Each structure stands twice: as structure tokens, then as C-alpha cells.
Image: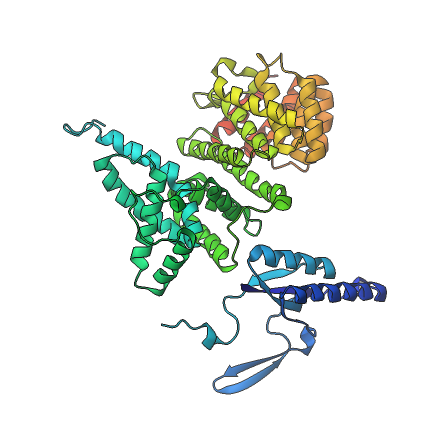
Length: 128
Length: 419
């Protein structure tokens, strides 16, 4: 069993006409609830979440032993991760099938990325 | 090269061994990927086994089942080499899960090491997985299934060997990291998943266009791959269509150029067409028509079948070709299909009609040499020589190879010389 990150991006457009109507939002939420129930039943769902926008982000860095805070996101770009799932899947085909379902629910492209390791690093260290 | 006295068959044996290597490479890698679950381990093991085989076979002759011999030797050596490492113990476990045994002599036939034809199918679906970009799909297919060297592939695609090695490395990394599965897609997805496989094979064939010998390698490999796809998936008619299309194209290669100069279909010496390839291609096309599940490759093959069935250019059944292009356009509405249809229309309805149709797609295909060449031919036939000359010059500008460029330049010069 492998784990994959399914993420979706929001794109800053400054165009409010793209906002879905409240009726569409309701329908989308119903679809997401149903999909997450399906993920739970099949043991696919590990974790997921919906993120606040980049305006709510802070970057913390360690500069010459001093902790420095910077307002805003790390990467200055128009695209930001809006939400994600971490799922269990047998292989890429299974992960891609789930990504297809998520994409259908939220009407956005979904990026699928395999984890090289998950959990605590100590759990991922080789015995030798 | 003369063989040394006393060992008269050595040279012959060496070239036979090389031919066998080429033949069994894809099969052996595919089987070992199943056994070990790792492409790089499988490739290295097969290379090792080839070194052993080159020695042994030269002395003892080629064994009755060379593919099985290579697989068993490769498997044993991979386990042996890694035995003392964690990876080796893992490999041994993985291998014994499949075969239920550990090391054994390559001369003792074991059923589980028998290459299964399905292994190659699994591997081609892995290589042509839609999560990989087309360039990577092509490179992997040629390397792993075709057994072409990195250098040969690099030459075929006009990139450096280092760049091709990097491309293959990245593709293999993604297969492993993302866990792209090694299996034949289930029935409902099969036809859909076969599409990139067939387009990769056709891309390989087209990359082999031209006269150079290293190009012909690509064409022959594409035909060989398509033959095994048809043998392994006889129900998939598009596979048969692709094979027929390539065979019929290939049949005309001997007549397509004389002393390096292009000979148009109209002027080709049809006695130089390869009748055996035409026979095979026509039989496949007839079989596809009987099964009546048409698709883009089958329709393109049917068009080539009409060309190959005509004794002369004038005897070509052009209305039939236009009708087939209509079908093709409804399945694949691209400007290139429209271009080829317009060329056929010039034979049924005349050049004025054809030119009208060409003008509709001229902007979209502005950097496509065949479009300018088709316009040039129609303009010249209509007596509009100055425009024809310009169109030939544009065709030369975008020509994909030397021979085509020479031909178009010659035509432009010929028109310039006329009043």
C-alpha cells in the first residue's frame, strides 16, 4: 500500500464573477461528503483539509540563529494549494482513479504526488 | 569479414547470438520485471546474462530455449549478486514468491521462468502509461521492449546519448516512485489505454522515415512491436489497423526514392512495391472490414489499401479514397486529415475545388511542408505559376528532410525558369 497526496490549487484571478453560486456550492459540498464517505468505506482516506488563502500564511525561517517571520506565502505565485487529501492506494492507477473522482466533485484539476515516506522519519529508517 | 581457420562458424555464431539477444531482450526484461518488480534490476540482470551467454553459447551452441535460458541465468545472477545485502534478500523473497524456488541451473527448465507472452504486454502498458509524457513513453518502449541501445535511440531522435540516458532515467524513476502498475488494463479500460500504446508505436514508425539505415531500425522495430500487439490482443481491431497501415506504407519504401531523390506516388515504379507486405496488409484490412469496428488506424490503413491495390496511379479508386477520408475526418477532425482529403479531392473534383479546401486550412498548417506542397501542385495545375513557385519555396522551408527539401527547391526553380 502506498500513500499519495492529491492536491488542488486555487488561482488568483481578481475576477469575482468566477465565484460559484450558493446553490452550486451546496451541490458541490454534497458531492464531496458522499465521496469522502466512499473513501472511508474503502480505507482510502488518511487525512484531508481545506486551507485558508495565502493572505493568512506566515513563513518562519532560521536566519543566523535568529527566528525570522515573514508575512505571506513562501512562493510568490498566482497559484496556491487550496485543499488536499492524503490517501492510501495500491498503485498509481488506483490513486489516479480517486483523483478523477475528486476532480469531478470540485471541478478543478488535481495533482497526484506519491509520498517517498510518510509518518515519523524514525519509522522510515532502514534497519541497517 | 572472413572467419578464422579452424573455427569456421564463429562469425556466423556471433551474429546469430546477437540476433537472438535482440529477439529475446524485451521478453527477458519483461519477465524479470514481473519476477523482481524492478526495471533497473531486470535490465542489469539481463545484461549480465548476455555476457555469460556470449561465452557459453559460442562454445556450446545456442540452447533450444534461449529466452528461458537468459531469464533463468539473469534471475540467478541478480539474486547471487545481491545475496548479502538487504536488497538481495528482498529480491530473493520476491523471486521465490513468484517461482517458489531459489537458484537453479539455467539448463533445467522451470515452468515459472518460462517467459509468458503476457509479460511483454504488461511492460508495454507500463512504458506507455498515460501518466508518462510521450517522449518518455517512446524512449522506454524502444529501450525496454525493443532492446535498442541508448545510443541507437538517441540517434533516431537526434538528441545526445547523455540526454537520452537522462530521459530514460527520469521515466524509470517516475514508474518506481509513483508505483505505475505492471499489468494489462482490465477490459473496460483496455481500448482506451491501448490508444497511447498504438500512438507510441506509430510515432516510432514515423520517426523512422527517411533513407538512413538507423532510421529503418525504428520502422522495423515499430512493425515488430505491432505484430506482437496483434498476436497478443487479436480482439483489438485498431492494433490490426495500425499494423496494416505500417505494412502498406513500408511496401512502397523501395519505390519512394531513386538515388536519394523523392519519387512522388504518381511517378513510382509500382513493380518495386513489396508484394508480400501488401498481401499481409490487405489481408489485415479485409479482416478489419469484416469485423466492422472501424477506428482511425483502420481507416488510414484502408486508404493505403486502395492505393496499394491500384496497378497505376490513374487506376486509383479516388472516390473511394475521398469517402474513406470523410469517415476518417468524422473520427479524427484534424487539419492534417483535411489536407490529405483535399489532395484526393484534386483527383475527383479538380484542382480548383481542392485549392478552395486547402485555403481553409492554410493558416493552421502554415509550418507544415505538405500543405504548401499540395497548394503548390494545385496552383501549378491551374496555371498560377508565380503563386505555385512561392508555395514550393515555403514547402522547402519547412521540409523535414534533405530529400524533400531538394525536391521542393527543384520544383520552385523549374517554375522560376518558365515565363
